Length: 251
Image (cartoon, rainbow, N blue to C red; front, side, top):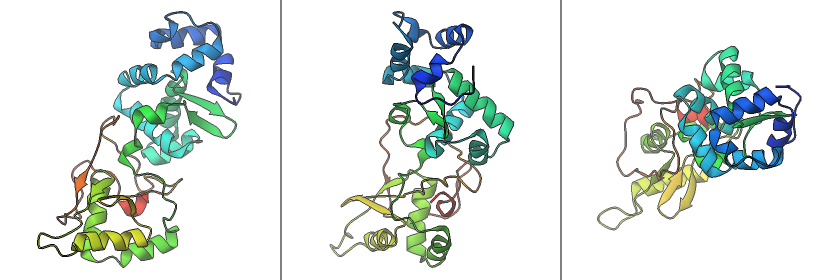
């Protein structure tokens, strides 16, 4: 397989030898039934949701984590993904090479990119929230986090070590404004949370600096799973065993 940058997955496939294309069809046999008319048809078939899901079902945890890191950081080089995965560059290169051989990734002039529809099938990569438009820059972010009160901190902790999306109690049992809702509103105003609707908030992330303090540590493949964590009760700031990095690092 050549390392010449391509402009699309179809371009990437055109650069493969007959043996490399045969290997792809052996590893993803659904792509060969019926036989595709040409490379463009093969690329289209390789990016259908059904075929992508079948390919993901055959991946181990290491490859799923590499895939999630690529979804977060693309376009990227193995060195970039090695940082996110907290591994060495050779390991990251081997994992991404496997993903490319499976037509789950392709090399553009800017770096490796995930195949089209991959993000739709995987869902939110590594349990991270969406890219935030108003997340403070690193210097201001550190200051903002240092100034949080305990209730605000507990909200961020709940969304950091659990799903990135959470339900907020709008009113207390006596009908007064909920202190949790007030704290969530303050975090939204500061750009540390985003409000999805009247009853839900989401922890956003920066576009190019996820998992900076130790790598993405997703422990399972998440696909089309609705997550919602009640935030009415403050939680401990101590991460559970095997949990990923804190929001101050991933935001």
